[in-house]
Image (cartoon, rainbow over all chains, first blue to last red):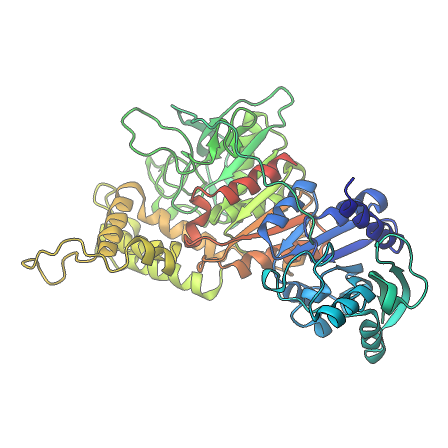
Length: 201
Length: 380
């Protein structure tokens, strides 16, 4: 098992903790459907993935995961309130065009929302910028700025401030350290590499 | 979102189905139409490829588009210049792998390639039905196919597949016979025609009906209303292509630079192509049939009588809906709408969209992406 895969599994276990047996789950930015396949196996969910890449939709088909090829915002608009038990954004919020509106839509369509994100305030990122004046390029951010999609990284404290401003309830949250495996218990905005939030309104 | 995975495997060795023969399914029972009309007996012409296994669970029904027919793969004789209309996709090792699946394709009810329709002979009168043929719906077409399957001993299909009109039939199959459908693939389709699609169809019908030769449908089959039918086909054919596709294929290419020719003779390649398409259509398609089939499609409406969600609520099989970005006849939006309703209902449904320059006809083009998708979905 690669280090990457191990990290992904930890992430999955925490996400699965907040999912009930047989839940209806919508995974926005589902990639190749690995998380939904996991949730289907562990919690017998009815899961639907959404992604903008044909190749990734093809992988979902291979996994037997229902998937929708297209725009997250347009799809959300077609669902009624609380149509899903849970809407999941796993490392996809930073790629959204209008995160504020889409998270609000996610909270309308889902009874609960899971957001997993890389904490941009992690101390190494800060140190890199302070010392080198450059973005971090490592396992988490493997590519140079000119090789990546448009991305809008944010930190734990920025996300907390957003939830407070929009009166979003934080039901649960888990911070993982820089290795993305052990839980991070103190000063998460500085020491958490990855954060997973369970939200409601 | 950053997990990687190996690309899909290359397709195995492909082959052709070779020589094929059609067969006629004849039911001597009266066939009742949704409209209330009846015909005394029913004929569907069909072809099959591959073998039905002992468990009888490997059958795939392919539904053709408006101008297609039962001949979707192989050739009838050594003189046949073109193979069946989906020969790229049907055969040993192909997406519809005839070494594994028993593939069935029938000429639709109402069609003019040997099945009961306006062009067929009414056994009670010995004359062609012409406009006496009952009003036809997609539901009727599917019901007729279900009788064919009964006769073949196929209780449950591994899959139903179709594009365009075939896509609508496919959806109708999933709605009308949920217990007989293992899975379905509906491509370049919609829940109902939008105003633009109806407008194009009616303009085509008007071209036929305003051709004096049409004579209220009573034309001599050897002297059909060729001008009207050709124009209808030319116009419809444009709606099957895309702006970018036509530009790439024809642009402003001129056929000849002959200065001496008449002002309105064929000048551009695209004119030559469309005139040829129109003319060859007259030789293989019946004008009254064109009226019936286009009308059936215009009336197809999964939003009625209650709502799209209500209509689709009977579906149980996993479904794959495929839209094509360059399809402006049945645009992606109409395909998405079907998938979105299925997902609202908590069905196992997938929507995929392909970017190809071939417009509505994209599903007929040999495409590695589409074929990977079909193969994968049939396998799961």
